Image (cartoon, rainbow, N blue to C red; front, side):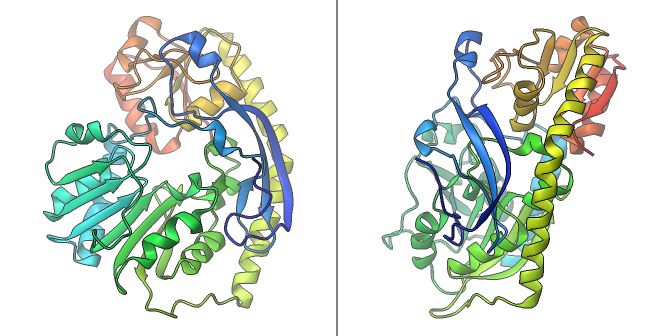
Length: 393
């Protein structure tokens, strides 16, 4: 079913931004065969922006299309750049919230890699909850401090964590308040927390259309993220941009009963208006941006095969929007769980970096600019010097 009202403030006063059709609904679920990849479920995206809270969402999102299973793979910890970010974040949270020896809970835990990292560095214990997760992957984490449960977060009082966090979970929820409010209500006042989502303001500013994927019903901006967390009964210490400004990060505490009122002031209204205006400009620029990307791709292809480095959501979006019908595209990823599988929708095969030694592409498209130095270093180690391009600056 569609999502006619804003997932954050529940109003229906939204401005149209853009439409994209026939996107693979689970870009992070590569398939075992090309036929299965091409036959992957698809859905339409109608991105709108709420005039009340500056939240963006897909009004045509249909949750019933999404079936998460063990094929879903979006872990980033294989990258040294991402590991450095994760380790720095873990150390900061441990210091700021005093997590040594704590009991930590995560909802939307997925593979649980950050939870394991946090618990190991804090000498803490952790439980990760995710109804779509494979609990059998607990053994992949290399620690006995963490338990992954394929269930909803426990709110019956039997689980009393000292700290609760989520990373890249809220944007998947049609009604985030309905899911998260019971979790917050079960916490003791003062319980610390951390929540992280993709940064919609970054997406708009950098015209990063590649970050729009079907499984994200929501695209949070700073005003809408702060509003949601406050509505949930959390005192927001800060909302900041993280990981090259691509993420929004919020440090929070469980507010006391009756606390954390939502304050609408002139600054908030101005911030909302600015986001709405930028969203309209973004939508107007998308068609020209996609046309320019297609022209560039055609020029590169005349030199031979083109490699797209990154089989995550950005790379999958690029392959589907720009190069879906072209067999001369190689998709590279350092995650061994993806190697030999095929991109949802476009059907391109995913290969390890070493495969490029034989294939020798003249051009490599980097899906995320944060990994440029890491990737060019790997290319040089392989004796390759292709022309390197990034999807956005």
